[in-house]
Image 1 (tube, rainbow, N blue to C red):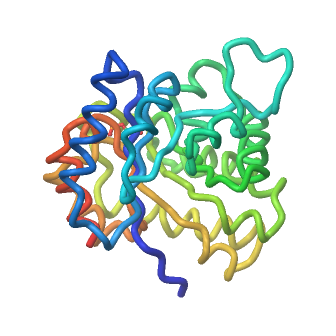
Image 2: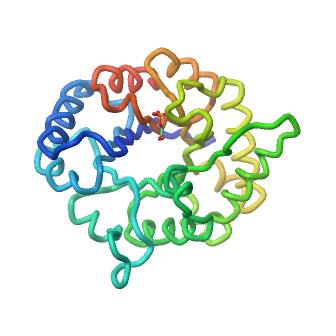
Length: 251
Ligand code: PGA
């Protein structure tokens, strides 16, 4: 089995309010996580704060972005491309977050974005997850569809560069976390879905994260029992000590 270094991605969403605050928060996170060498740490500020944060960036915390258009240039009002983001040292790009899918982003568009990010040799962190759970297990079909739309347009080599973040929408920002058993089941399901589309060895190389109300208090159990390689963290990534504690939990 491929052994991955754990990966923890902080998604700041639309926080904090100013570039000055963003630089300060990034600096505090760098200090709080200084001793961590067992995991890759990524922070994704709002796009507009990325240049300011890039100026105070130190080795240790990698820069991420929350979205990128699939086009390189042209008639895409209000968008940025993966190429533009890479100018500021961005290495990871979150794609298909449920808050963007809720604005109308489709599986097809998500797949195109993944392609565009990979073309820039950056790492896409692709969010998948169901709106709600049902007793008949229909939510697995939703996740399988999301995975299929991405993996069927990639070469096996591209597939291995993708990070999948399982984020059940009902657990995002709600304080309701999936149980470690739910996470483990989904980890096995994602692996088997990718195995069917590609191969077992490819599936083993795709890194998987869990996201949805991850906190200092639940991170260790979710990590050890959930079987994922790390977390996508929203709210708790805005609190340096809590984010650092989550990183400790993936040791
Ligand atoms: P949360 O957000 O940790 O605040 O639930 C996770 C996410 O939306 O990526």
